[in-house]
Amino acid sequence: MKVAKGLVYQMIVSMIDDEHLQEELLTELDARPSIDEHPLDDMIPVERLNAAHHKLEEISRDEFVSWRFGHLFELDTLGVLGYLWKHSSTLEDMVEHHVKFLGVLMDVVTATFEPVPGGRKIEWTPLSLWEKQDPIATQREHEAAIGFFCKAIQVMTGENIKPKSIAMLRKRPATYPESFGKYIDLVTFRAKRHSITFHDYDLRRPLTTFNPHLLKTLEAYASELLSTMTESQDFATQVEQVLIKNYSGEFMQIDEVAGHFNTSTRNLQRRLGESGASFRQVLNKVKLSMAQVYLKNPSFSVGEVGFLLGYAEPPAFMRFFKKHSGMSPSEFRHSL
Image 1: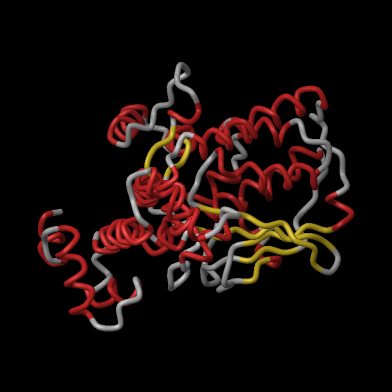
Image 2: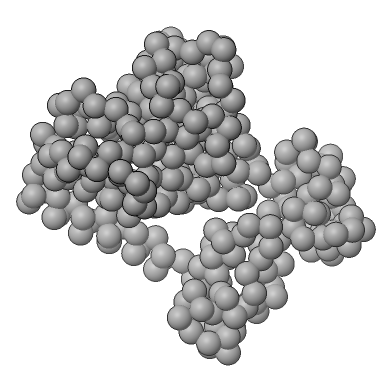
């Protein structure tokens, strides 16, 4: 689970005025991007994004610091994705580029852009593993995205427009910054997913920075990046990613995974064998890695971690974990 280093970098330098503290955090999180590195090599573990959200909230003592960051609308934060936004033809085109190429910015969340009465709604769905690993950081990152979009539709169109509606997981706050107050009457709180709905007539608005020639080049480059991200992984790793991204309380069966790759179960097993693994081995590896992530969260008991991974009884989970890691879940926690 990775995100672009530039995202974490912009969060820190935009929201912390103290240069000494900036340097300290950038060094601690290794979040200083390199102009010499390929975008795919300039990705860092999502845990550092989580840490950045928590650090900023701790320093500022402001639960809206992530929203504030998003509402600054630092287009450089998005890297290649930001340039696709900038040179899109209309607001609708911009959102469609966001949904299609979000993977070049982070691989921990997907987005959909679907028609609803009077408009279209973009809705974000985080990986279950990321959401359970750190639900607060996951929520804050989506709030930053909503703040970003609220500002973007004004800056990119040159018009003082607002979304049709907004949905957020958080409860209605007693106090909030002025920048959030402008939208509070549009927000449905305690929603199941974060989303923004745009009016149809606003989606047709042209963007002031549209450049068709640059857009065509950027689309080709972003498509190549996404393709390279998949091709650079061996087949067993690709299957791991499919199992993780589609986990929602239970794991996909082998025939479902084969269907994802448009192949037969027999061919899937053959291709895994060429990578030196079986489907059972890949599944056990994913279960173990997810268990280790969940066990790092002290709010989950060992029994709850087992339940999250499909084990109805704690002893069965503990036997699995000991067999594949060499230590009990409790011993793993003590080793952290």
